Picture 1 (cartoon, rainbow, N blue to C red):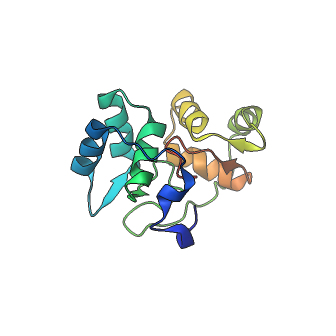
Picture 2 (cartoon, rainbow, N blue to C red; picture 1 turned 120 degrees about the vertical axis):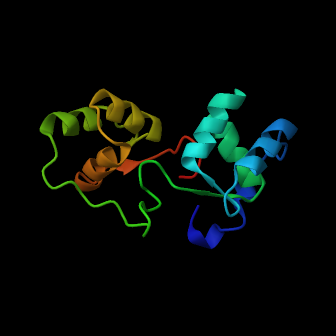
Length: 143
């Protein structure tokens, strides 16, 4: 969804039902009426819901997601855009390209590769930026 869609996240979902326990847990996890990526994933892990379930519920509640762990919404205090890696490891680039599906690298696969290479998730996003690899879909459904 784009910035012009802000405040109308529910429109992208057919099913409008949110389990009450999930809705309450999301409300408790909010900071400034936003749900961070890390809190959404922790909530999913703790509650038994999937990250996609949490993201869909947040959309239906018209709650904006923030703090993408890959840095795709901007990162740091100044919400800076991820800068392209200057000289990415060719082996890493090869692994990223091997894992493309329909021309994109999934968020989940980016996380898995970061763990495999013992890198920060934002480092994977920086290499993707350098190689013009789009990261999608988001585990929470934000992109």
